Length: 222
Image 1 (cartoon, rainbow, N blue to C red):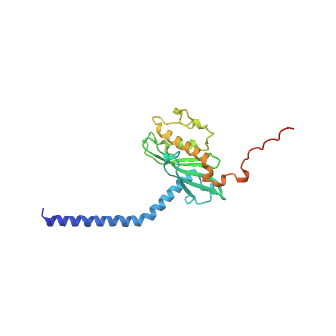
Image 2 (cartoon, rainbow, N blue to C red):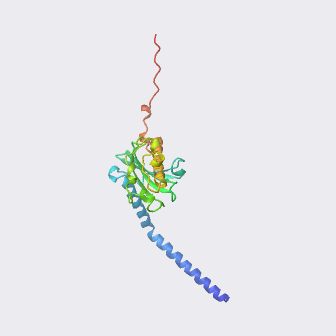
Image 3 (tube, helix red, strand yellow):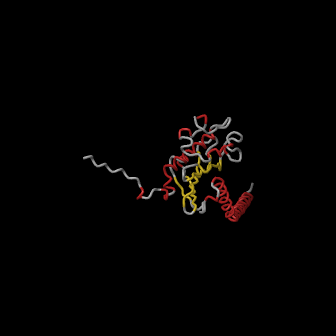
């Protein structure tokens, strides 16, 4: 092959690469806003699946904070959406991860009412085995609805596990790892909220004047 042919091929290749890159950039620019809006709506649909919009009146997607705690999501950042109604806290929804799924991390939304009960749980992303582990999805079975209304006292903390581990939650035939990971993630969110709910909703903290005080020592009998 002559030098002329090599140069011609190189120029044509560069030209095609430039045209391709330009087209991709134009398509991306033209669809970026739509993609962002679609993602926003999809997130809101998932949130409303466990926390109906009638229950809150603030901008749920805008009122969020990111927390990082080694007891949550394997230490990964967790976004928490805060719901209020008439400026009173209603619930917090944790976008957390169960890092120990069979096929990898399982992404979850875990809603916790201010009284510590579970508002709802939904799986938003996973790679569990189809037909075995995927009943964790609400579209595949009603297993995930079994968390609704539960709390750290119902069942007791020691029984927040699948049946094979001595807990009250069912596992699936031929698949224990997936439900075990989800139960563990929900449990750790409830434990976190019980310990740090006042950090998420500062208004839940007792006013300084209402703080319990130590009883005064009784006067000695004369």
